[in-house]
Length: 140
Image (cartoon, rainbow, N blue to C red; front, side, top):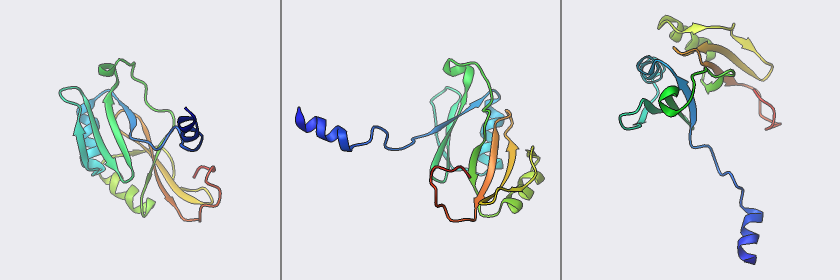
C-alpha cells in the first residue's frame, strides 16, 4: 500500500548493532579474558553452547566458539576499538595481567591507540579520541 511505501522511504533498514561476534577457540580462556582480565559485565550465556555475551559500554561482544556455531576458526583480521579514558594507564594494567601488545602506543592525530591480542589472537585496540569528531565517516 501507499502507506507502507512511504514508511519504507523514511525508515532506515538498519537501526543499530545488537552485537559483534568475536571468534573463539579456547572458550574458557576467552570468557575469563573478557569477563575477568578486561572486567566487562557478563550479559548472558547461550545455553549449554560455548557462546557468551559481555557488555563493552555501548557494544555487546558475543564470544562464540566458532566450530560449535558451524564455522571454521579464524581470528579477526582488524581490531575492535575499545574506548578507554587513558590508553597508557589501561595498557600498563593489562600488561601487568599478562596481556600481549602488538603495537606501540601511538597517536593518530585524533586519538591514542594501542593494540593487544585476546587469548585466541583477536586484535583489540585500546582507543581514546582526544580531537573533536568533524567527519563521522573517518576512522579513529
